Length: 608
Image (cartoon, rainbow, N blue to C red; front, side):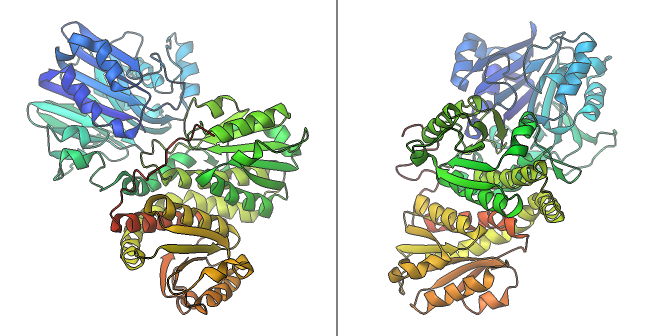
């Protein structure tokens, strides 16, 4: 989510540090800062906005020589964008500075403890506790102080630490967030990924979870938290600076699809405790939720499709009446006060104009609002009674990929949580939560094969001008989202339908030039779906199915198929998502289009 750079050694200037930080701008951020060690000791400079704003603040200092420095681009998770909340963060002495990517889950407990000891905090962030903890443990050995601090931290982190009195060393560590380090013999480096380092170094070390790195100009030493030394081979980076911003991927969309395992970890982190959903964000609304007999979901586009998955889950497991409304239509409906007990608004950006006006209307009618968004401090999050962040990190590609996966995962878990609050928890829900917790690993294991499978099938289907997606139950939302992805980035006309509706009109479109993409998981509606597939085959339509692995029954009835792991019914929309995204991606690439920047579309829709 955030971007980190660190340098130590000869011929180092602040400009070199800032130029390297610019290579991480693709990650998205709201503020930037540097901490450098030179003749005047440790100096910290921060600015809200782009790195160019930081450069203006630094002015002539950019060409100052320093011996050590760390830099950071922040994407807010705790506390809105401000100079105080921007990184790097320092301790009470001003001698220790820290940059951090991740979330410290127990920061509030640690902060209270430190404040009792007399530590004074300047920000609202979770990161600042790290600097104060290091100060608390410091007795002359900065490496030991960092090592002891890491034992106290719960959550995810990639950190870089400097100390004014130790100008020849940067201490770094990782748990759950990426970190790359290296040394040339004259200078040492660290970064969130290889992009900022390629101008300086090509042989790097990828730090693993639970490892600590001590970076000096002439060496990098890596150990575990218990001090045990780790022998690690370096990796030579062969791609150039231009492609490195995409991590070696051809497009951001492909990169972000491959980030989905980590996205799921971030989205679910600290939200499953002892096998049960845990949403602290809605604790103060539990009484209202327990009494709720109706829910309205407001969303647009991809978020609307995620809302449909949530609707089906709530209907199946809680018995609450639930409607999913397209926000642009909802805002103009005539509704009475108390039309719904609870509104759940879904918006990736938190700035979607139609959804924002929808929640304002709902609030005027006296309804409580829970928002689901990806952007801390966004307007929708500020105007809601409770906000649940999906923690997907910046998404550069315009078409939603990893943010959709995060939305679906969090909404299924939220549905399980609501069912528990109203007293409808069951062993079935417990199984779903357990399987959901393992989804990051499932994604990691299946994405490489999915990539090759979808690339091959895209070459086979890229010349068609039309596509019809169809599904039933949970798979209807999957059909809509699959069709949306295809038309967004490949400009092929694609429509999503409930499979049983085809015979009421849409089937008239089908012939040998109008293929069907059938969503056929191993669920209670599979036999009905196979009947619908046979109806389309009878009209000479070519059928590509996405189905459960080793499903011989489906394979006999279709022309081509994509196989996904078998999961519980509510999780098929989740596990099928990357396959549909990859299929659309490779169709677009085959047609010579840029999937990152589809025509006429914007990432955040802030107009009606």
